[in-house]
Length: 363
Image 1 (cartoon, rainbow, N blue to C red):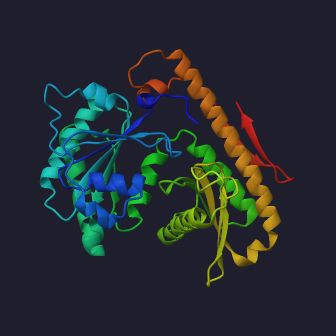
Image 2 (image 1 turned 90 degrees about the vertical axis):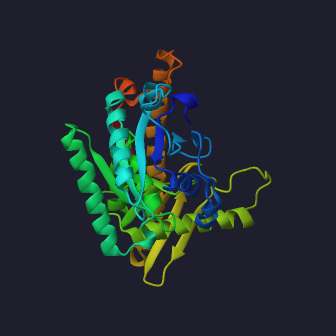
């Protein structure tokens, strides 16, 4: 799906102090490791590069940094590390004294911003599963205030930090990583527009476009995300994959369990329906709607086919733009976000006509 070589893909950097939970986050989100198994992970002592684009729609590299790394060491190549970085995720252990972590956060952010001002800075206030709701809010408020005050005192008011409460023992870590990845997808406004059009014409209450492997949702409609609904959709994907692996009729044993025939319909006892359809081998559309509105399943299925065709057109345009950029750029160095932003782009808008078909207008 992506003509760019691995080293040219944007990077997401995982940073923080030792034992803050960086490696556990990477293993749980991108490698389906059980949270309990992460208790046996050894501390990271070198940079771990993980290219997940071969099995996932998310076309990024994840770099896990050891907590003891010194950004001011002469041997540390800041331009190489931060130059091709799309997002920097800094993990803070909420159950520990976080003053040292805040100092490291400030040093990291200011150093990275000098190299690449296009980096998105995300702060994961991690391991909050052991805290009460009041304590979570108080910890987040304190970290938010101290971190921004430090930046203001240093004259770096232009740096924006986003804060997320996370834990590997619930879906909050997937929700947080979804928000991180969405900021790095140029087609996000188009995808949200298509989802809005789909749900308004199909009596759907909520729709997510999921990356199947990681359970990160790369787009959703404009209505607020309810955590319980998101968890239900994640669980549904797990059920579909597990059942497909066990009962799927596949002649090729190496074929993916999730294919173009994958779909699922789950009726809950509160009158709600969960409906999953395959968009491509990496993406799934998961919808939530009332059972009363599902009597027009034919209309919903037809609109979905139009939606899937529109999604394919959007990413065909993306691939053409990436191929053109790759052709004109003969340098072997990583491509930074600021460099690629000047490349020719294609804007798309999606509409569903009166006959229910999706039309992509290109300019």
